[in-house]
Image (cartoon, rainbow, N blue to C red; front, side, top):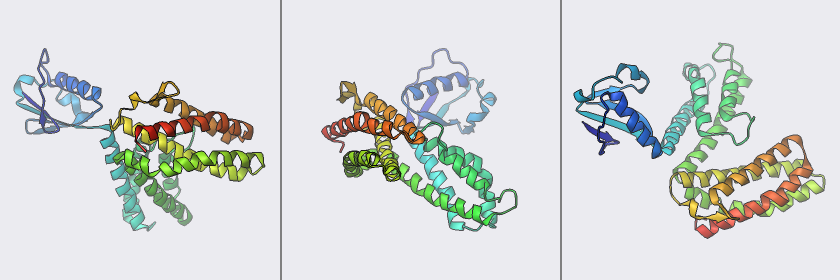
Length: 301
């Protein structure tokens, strides 16, 4: 039996596998070890549904001439989902008519689309409202599914759709070329470091509202930095394991920085300005500075 993965013939030696399901299990395990996910199977001239495994898993291997496997890297899967969601949202935005049958038909898929959104735009903060959940809630607020249309609800929904499209396009750029995206935000990273002292000063002088606005921007850019570094490592664009910061591998150090950011988010929620100032000055600023210097020394930025 000839086995192909993404049109490439592989050397797969059958040992004691007698049934197709056993072969597929072995291939799935090998793909997973290499960071890939199986997305499709074709046996000879027939397409097999992954969700209907019971129908074919016991088919004898001896009766199969060829097996073609489609597989995607998590990055490709995420890009496919992002593309599909953006196309879906664009249809809603372009129509823009709350009484349109097209809109009503599109909103029947809200639950599935909400899940896809949350699959590719993961919330950085535990307990926060996800983009997918917010999308679903605002879609429900239009009243279109129930036939009781709310004009204000639809306007709010349409505004969120436009904002979400911008966010998703940004995530596509991050996934498609994280190194280029990281270089593009390098000036903002340096500005962020310089701005930490300004935020602390705002807190000390009682200008809490302005400080919080600056902190939100700060968290956005640093979380973007951490995502990009993760994508660079995941896509093997750079061996991050060879870089050490404060005696720890870059990936581990990024995790410690992320923990400090989570603690900062918690302090922001409770309005603990003293803790916010301490975290910025003694935890986050030194770590972020070391992180940026390590990226500069690695040639990434």
